[in-house]
Image (cartoon, rainbow, N blue to C red; front, top):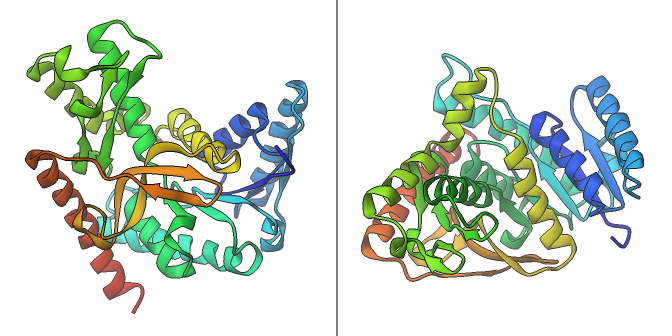
Length: 314
């Protein structure tokens, strides 16, 4: 643990569940929570800290009174942002959340310029782009959480389909969230056996479609919110990999600089996570169909980035 400090900005369902997960795992020595709702953040810090004591964890959880409390953070997770509301256009959500993320970045630039940033706010790839452009940080410092979550969803649907191999399923997903996701069945395995050797093409297509709609399915069932247990746990894995220099490979949203033939745009790709944040970007050999799907995903992010450049950064 070595006196590691993690900041979490935005203490809604994902942020609070992440804090709870980190505190109980004892991954870091300090967690500081920041949110515009001061009474909520104080209550959350108390509740989670007390639960950590019940679990005999050494992690201390405190509320941030101002940006200065982020000083010394090794990692800052940003979940702040609004969900899309009825009547709100995609551009409205994009620009509103870009404003929120940029304002959060101002404090980080002053008080924790060496911290690694994990972005969870949506639309995710565009918020990673916003965070990098607003901060001026190097690309290895700013990482988006999506691929681990999508891979976990894919693993769930594979298990549902085959009925065995729980805990032995490795799924691989690239690209953005939702329709632009690029599941990679040929890089997905059950106990080391590639998916195409176990399931028919129809079964695999069914898994792919269910994976793409995994988040939407939960939103529809909840009616008033979105998933948070799986996103929080996925984020905790990234925090752990960076703090403990595990150099594990996870799919994450990162700024590309020539990888896969793209630059100055964010894409979801496999990366090695360690103490420097992004230690390495892994380039897979994609087939033609996968290349086309990934290009479609990149183009969708480019549309959002163009909107940001025209209406926000100018």
